[in-house]
Length: 354
Image 1 (cartoon, rainbow, N blue to C red):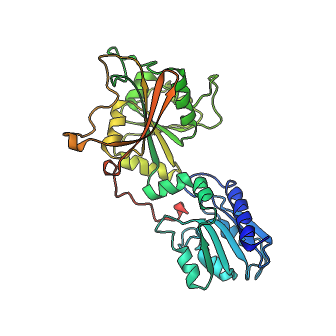
Image 2: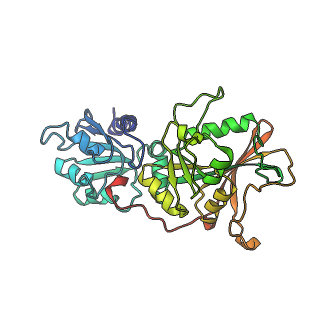
Image 3: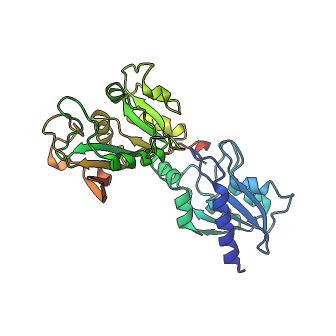
């Protein structure tokens, strides 16, 4: 086996090891140490905030001097900052590692720079090995780190004439069973589902993810409610498998920042026109899911209301990623263009992001 083949096999193993770590505020990272002859001599992964990072976890399995001349294969660029643990770059240098191979660069400016530090110390550094697989593994963490907040998907269901409810306020069901099943599948892969107090009081939703039989799916989003109205103790949300979070603060940026501190990487917003419009107005939407039913209501509540557009030149422009048929309904998936999104959010510099 060539050196390149051995390192790719080690990277595949590191990617598998990374999945042992918890998903959340910290990235899932795996590491494999190869001897100078290409044999695996140690493995490790990051087990969570405050524990050894993957590289140090692997090095800890070796005796003093056991990594001298070895190659460290890591899914993410070794960090170069001190938080609750020391810089992995310094640990690798101190261990005498002669070569470091990693898949993905660390986008956090507070933790990045490990590759440069290693190179300065005379360690050979190879970046981008199995990059696509590494980015797939870390997709949510990478995006939230670059954004400095959770990724926000905004969902709504509407009639063909843009209504979310009829004139009498009824809204169940505008869309058909195929569209509703798609929503539940997407709920299950989100870390949190966000609604406003108005939706909770009007519809008493459970905010759970269910399968086609109506049973709870194995993974559930954390329910989040935004607004100042009091929620009754008997509301269905209190019977959710995960304890709900309540925010009276209408500063959506602050809400997202707090959710990120809690390890939330993806947010699914489906809380009615007022909240949906507030997220759009704040430029905090990364993806739009519009479920469109072939029905006309003619009156009733609009799916989207005031989003701060005073003239056509201020319109929120979307790039359509796909249009899918779901039974009789259509699902349009789109992303707001860069000029319609908020900027200026910075990833926290503390240890929590790596």
